[in-house]
Length: 268
Image 1 (spheres, helix red, strand yellow):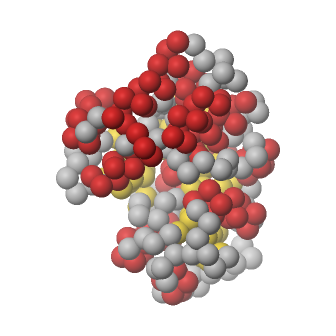
Image 2: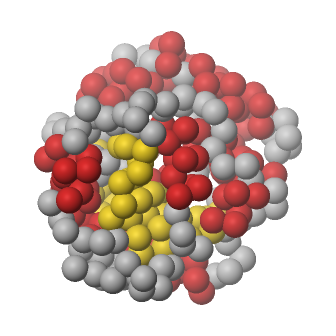
């Protein structure tokens, strides 16, 4: 058992909805195995059919808190609810079917602590699937407005954010898709800076069926986010071309999209 009154530097925030129990257990276990111990782990039960509280209780770790509201409100609502619940100065994201290496928090928190000029610091991620090539996602360095509009962004689930900056930017905007892109744009508009470190400490699960969510009929919010923020961020022709690319990607077969991604990203 750990002491819940110990100093909390980081709040790990997870929103849970219908994750297979074994994957959820693996995800929770990977956070609890972190070498950086000064954190709390807040899991928002977004009306999940998975018994989140029972699974969390299996770990008998007082750093884990399950909160919720008894119904499904959606990912963005769950994250915003969690922001109000957390107690740390920094918020680290974590998705329910992913796992991280034991130095995830120490690597990313260590970097943001030493570089106060940045409000968001992300690690890179290794894409994991049952039939994929194991791509490495994320471009190291500062993510300027131009780069974000061109598709180079922090890895949302592998990010640590200053809570103060997250709140100042208005939290998560109400988009069913691309809520992370909207957040990065809001932070940039508020004068905050974003950075990606070169460490690959996050395993991001993407299965073939997940690509169905990237078809054009599911990309409406992503396109709306780009159309809303690009003019405010001073987009030029190259940035607006990214919108056309999003539309084209939504029209292509999954096999073609995956082949193109494999050429654009290195394998692990």
